[in-house]
Amino acid sequence: MNYFEIFLNSYPPQDQCERDFLTIKPETMLYLLWALVNVALFIFLILGGIKAVKLIRQKFGIVTAIILVFCFLSIVFASTKEDNLNNQPPGSHSWNFNASESIEQYSKKFATVALENHFVSKYGLDLVYGVSKQEQRNVPVSANSFTIGLVSGTKWTPTSIIISPTDDNKKFNYEVHGDEDWKLLGFVIFSHSKHFVGTAELK
View 1 (cartoon, rainbow, N blue to C red):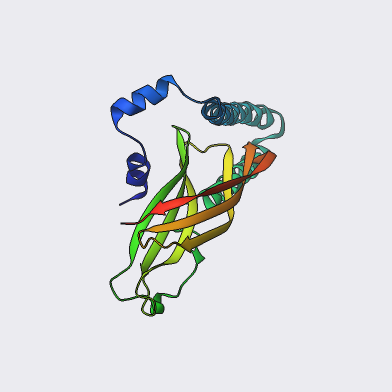
View 2 (cartoon, rainbow, N blue to C red):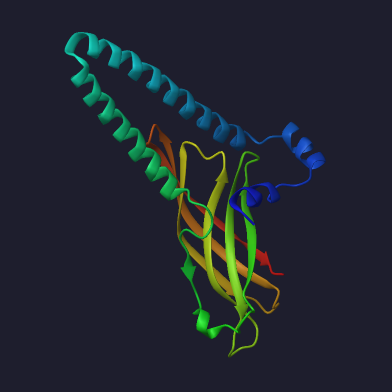
């Protein structure tokens, strides 16, 4: 399953989506508005930069204009690279719990938990688990948390993931801590902590 399919499969059927669209939460609208503001500011910056380059070329020459364009592109690409690194697809940064050598061969499985849905984006938790050679029951191998969807202007950084087996061999308890930064043009405006607790259903 690829990155795009994970995003699509995380949402309910179309009829339920239509009902949810009519009752979009204020928090979802805030995420959407923040993303649109970032896009609008980026477009404004591009257009303003083009006009500035034209004026500088006319007044100081083409060499100065080229240097200005190079500096501008370096700042834009640096910001984009940082956002891509911090909002990477599942599997980019994992917490490890049990070594693969301690797991029965061919017993590894995967599970994805929706921590929070905003209609336009999703916070998720990916679990890798398998049957322990010693205990002969499901144990967590690794886990990571991610965001997918329209995440422009925000950066989710998980700081702690705890996965605990339960008496039910088909369930794990999870606890995820992390920080979310809200940005404008790559600059952090404010940040806050998020905390998710729940139970993951295993296959």
